Length: 183
Image 1 (tube, helix red, strand yellow):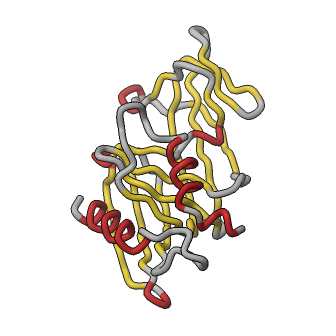
Image 2 (cartoon, rainbow, N blue to C red):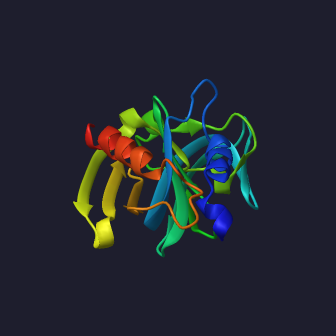
């Protein structure tokens, strides 16, 4: 568990989800209290734990949810918000056919995409609403809603764990809050 509170480990995990050309500006350990990820994907097929591109594939609506507390790393780049689990997690997945009129928000699958990697990186411009309130023992609670309907209930702890493995936690936490609050 102590490796969760290690800035090097956090940078590695977040780095796996940061788009090419972007650089991590700030990252912290946090708690996700509820995760609801939505996506509409076109020209693909669903196989076990991934979506695979297929010209003859159909449009798939994916809902990925978790309704319990779990450790996450939260990071920002110049243009993106990244939320990645600190450890391997299980989610509840629901699949459906796309509603009419959803073509404008559909994402095309260009390469094999694991379900675990969906919903970890969002353009900052796609944030619809972000509300903060004070939490217990100096923490900050963040309710975040994206334009595609995805939402997160996050908690940003005041401290970055014990042992000093995250020496920039306080300054990075403030940078993330400022960036998200300025939307």
